[in-house]
Length: 229
Image 1 (tube, helix red, strand yellow):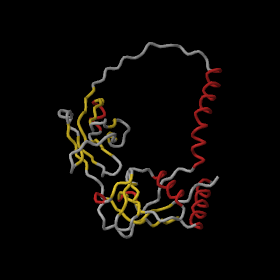
Image 2 (cartoon, helix red, strand yellow):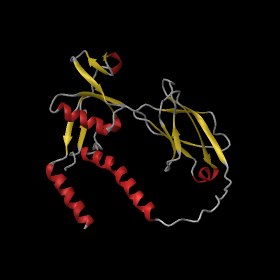
Image 3 (cartoon, one colour):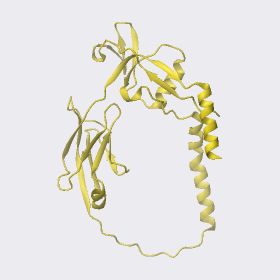
Image 4 (tube, helix red, strand yellow):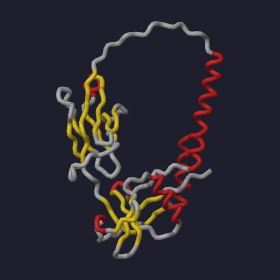
């Protein structure tokens, strides 16, 4: 089954009407200047945006987007990949069952006691302008998966081994609609931190959808086959 062609979104003419001045319409807004619903896509994933565009077909769409969502290929997952993802756990369980049925008995050794020192890192992530807490943002050490996410009050707290701090002192904060914030961690002063994160620039207006040309998609597939050969 073929994957969905890559699409890009652009807003060539930014709307002159401020988002705050538009009339609420659920989670979206209604622009009084042109009596059009303006959809808020700032917290939507690439796949959700692509599905919305497919559903609307050729209809006119006005939206609010972060700058990082525009003028790039949307990373939309093909529908058939969900089926594969659904089947993988079952295949994995069956494989494990076959392995366990044939594996020899292993000699049980006593657990090895390893003494490690840990450092607690805690604080609160807030909006740079409004000072409001940022909920459920990602907090990880740069280049690793070690970290956590902020709670409903924007607070985070986790422990990390000292050896990680020795090799990596950069803590990365990410959240949809905000620029990535990176701070340096001082092992002697890493509790009750207050971290500010800046809101991304947003664009509001009628969108233009650019689809990757058919022959370019064919050319890319040929190149992939040649590289695999």
